[in-house]
Image 1 (cartoon, rainbow, N blue to C red):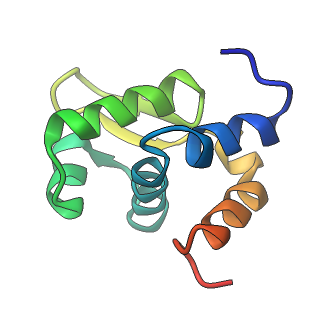
Image 2: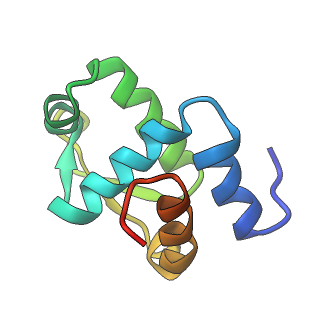
Amino acid sequence: MQFKSEDHLFWWIFVGSKGGKMRLKIIKLIIEQGPLNANQISKILNVNYRTVMHHLSVLIDNNLLISEGPRYGQIYSPSKFLIQNKLLLNKIMCENGEIKC
């Protein structure tokens, strides 16, 4: 899908599409706790591993996360693009009750 702007991308990924709330939770967790692997994310959020992997894939495909390390045990951390758009992310998190405003 082509996005007109960063704003459009962020709103679609986190609000306008199914699974947006889970993606916000994953991003928030990684920002707060630092790089994590899919198994850690799954356990902390009490969500099925495959569900986490799906959302991580969406976030990576849209340049919001990066992954490092061998396939099993890859760790995920915020991309430079996500960090550069942290104000937009915070606005979306605020409006969706993920952080206090």
